[in-house]
Image (cartoon, rainbow, N blue to C red; front, side, top):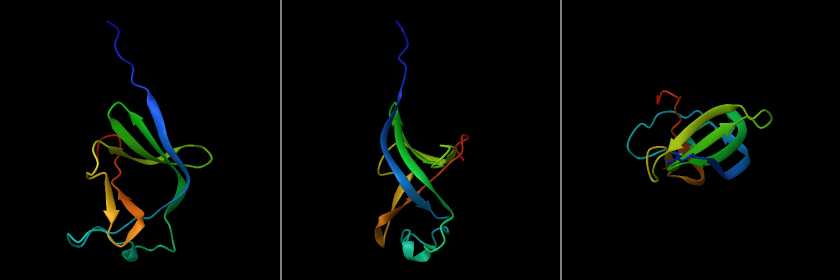
Length: 102
């Protein structure tokens, strides 16, 4: 019996996204966009959501070269990979990690 090959599917592409480096939560109240420096983004680029097997990946990529800036594997939702922002429906928090899971 031949082994199954998992293909990566593209689920969504957003050509223009803005990324902010945010401070850690001070309490359990959640993240608030009002606490961020919204007038000075740390990075801009493209967001691509892909799926391979049972895992989705939110990838932040350079608009021109497609070079990967960061990614957040999403094993389940809701979960720790994607969190809402308490004072806005436009923003969300991604937990990004390197290939070592850190």
